[in-house]
Amino acid sequence: MMNKVVFWLVFPLSTLRLVPHVMVMKLGRGKSVITQDVARWAQIYLEAAPISALKELYAFLFLMTFYEEFRNLFYYRSGMAGKLFSPLCRPLSTLYIQAGKIGPGLFIQHGFATIIGAEEIGSNCWINQQVTIGWADKTGGPVIEDNVTINAGAKVIGDIVIGSNSKVGANAVVVKNVPPNCTVVGVPAYIVRKNGVKLKEPL
Figure (cartoon, rainbow, N blue to C red):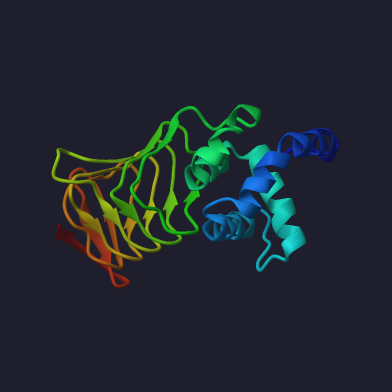
């Protein structure tokens, strides 16, 4: 985290450019889910949970100022209304979010060179950098269920389902369904933990 002097020079100036964004957050489409995103990110970065309305506003301004990945998610949620103001607060240029539907609380850590092209993503998922989630052909893209973590460099490709509470290890390549409550690693991916029990099992 930057030192306090730099913070208090940058943050107040940034809040001025974010006035339209606050209006979109409070009045635009997706208000409820954006609020849930802010709460999740604030819990991770600011250790604030639950947060009051005042803390929510501060957290939103803080996240939009210092975390480009959050900006991408905000513009995805807010649609054209938010994107109109994106020149004032630019998103991360190498992070692409093109999913059909994303549940609340998606957290994107170090979203550099990441493509999120799922058919659907559930609630409270976690995606790291250099991840590719996408279609293999015209049959469909992945469905990512609730509370899934996809670690750095992983590839999740095709018309498959990643079950709730599962983890995809760094650089794993997943082209088959992953059951709930599993950890998968490797190329091609295989199960190394299922329901808390260590094992080695093909998908």
